[in-house]
Image (tube, rainbow, N blue to C red):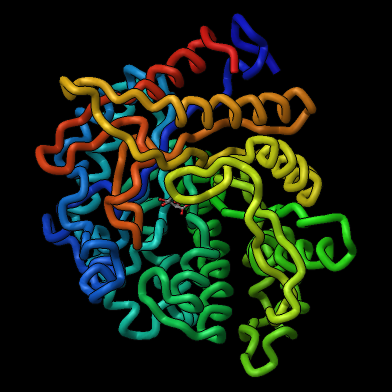
Length: 451
Ligand code: GCO
């Protein structure tokens, strides 16, 4: 592995990127034939999203991507992780595709390539066409096959313009927050539906891998997961067991099937009144098709302790760490442990990317409105990049890092109240202000700033 000049912390070919998602940044919700998504519908559910915020306009990247790409180029990132909105490609979730939707992503990818930035395309970042939810959504097995058809269209029409595919972003959020906890679209609270959704999302991933291999065999394919590798509250056996059980749903449920391993039955047994997902004969092999990389979205390491009142005997406990504007603890060494655990659990089967890492800060602009000093974000990035560099030095096969996020955006149920961006978004006039953390990252990428 050849290292860049200066501090030998990251290889010269380490892939530096920034990440966003369609519903969070595009806006143009009713433009060029885009259909309604479950998040458009959820935003109009009273009380679902802070202040009734919606994705109707957001930071209008649909029209302003040239400016955002110019900022990426100035930072020196080599890849942009965006997501393709299924409702732009198939407004009703099935059937013929919308040429204007395809053409938007072509424009985006061509502009990226002209700027020397690779296109890393996530095919599903939560914005399911509402029409499919009306026929049952992800709890319906058929949705997995609709997803494969949509992916096949993207592969055929956008394959030459995309450099790397990510099938799903965080299926745990889609299934559990969307269908069990109801905190995300479509806002359903039903354990059985959530388990079925989890299985069908993974089945959709497997079917999508097949479609991508058929249409774009030379393009790497992966998936982005938000896995937890928690620390036990104490070394007491009951806390160690609680932390292990926490990983059943938060980690094993979504990672193990990709490795050809079974679902964590212990988790299902804790809820006897609900039905585990129905699994067809060849589902496991479909889901476990080889991938080229695993994307990890890491924000923090939870601390988990025993709770006799929980069906699985666990609860997240507060830690002594400082917290971000999301209330999430800042645990950079947790990333080092996370990378080691995942690499070992996967028997080093495929390289890893950090496809999301970053923090929310209550950012404010300077008096003249031209700067945004965000030292807390710089410290967060520095310490987490140091953890990544240490993992690399330990021999972990980490190939790249995508900062979440390029720009402040729609933070799901929090609406626009949380700022994760390297770029400050003025939601009133759509002005972009590059934050100090972007300049910090630029120096790290160039090798001028050791972490
Ligand atoms: C996630 C999603 C992003 C979030 C980000 C901050 O990981 O939840 O991929 O869409 O906005 O992580 O919460």
